[in-house]
Image (cartoon, rainbow, N blue to C red; front, side, top):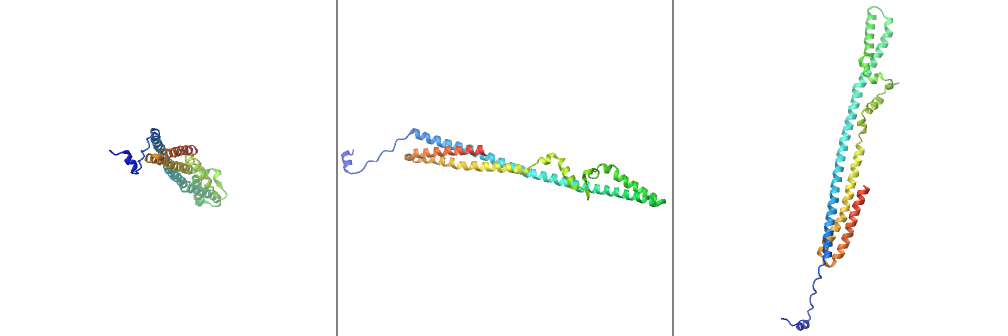
Amino acid sequence: MTDPAVSGESGASPVPPPPPEEPAARRGVAILLAGAALVAAVIGGRVAFRSFTATSLWQQSVREETKRAAAYVETLRYVYTSEQPLAFALSEARFRSEELAKLAPTVSGTDRAAVELEQALQEYLSSGQLAEASPLFNDPKYRSDRGFDITRRLADQLNENPDLLAIDPERTRASGDKASTHAIRLMATTIIVALAFMCGTLAQGFARRRQAFLSVGTVLLVIGTASAAVVEVVS
């Protein structure tokens, strides 16, 4: 055995024993790490949900835009390729009937019979079932000094489809942008929570500064949680 006196005379300083473990501090580190992991998981879930919502709304806005464009094209096609040619043809038949009625008294014989027959045919065309089926030709509100008010007829045709007018892809797209901004702001709060988790990890490795890391990590965790709550309320 070594004599304590000899050890003292040799000048070697004794190594100080390690500081005793503090159970309360170790529990605090565990709670900090668990709390940071839990908060990060909750925020990450909300970020994923809001990001999915934003993507879904953007896709829906594209579908709504396509549907509205297709409906507009179909309405334009119907008015300009179906109603307009028919209205012009009926207007031409009425004009021919009126002019032939003026011409009939000026001729005689077979010529007059042919004129009267043609006049009756044109009058029938301009007042028969085809004329009744043409709102552009029959309705006075679609008449103008230059012929037919096709623009007004087109507007009325669009107004007959309330479901089409209710489609608002811009509003849907704006909702998607709002959900995306919400997700980005929530993602930013995870940086604070990550710093809190880092402090908890450092507290495990540096026993002498454990309490300082634990205090800083706790403050960061509270700030990160409060920031996420504020984002949820404001956004």
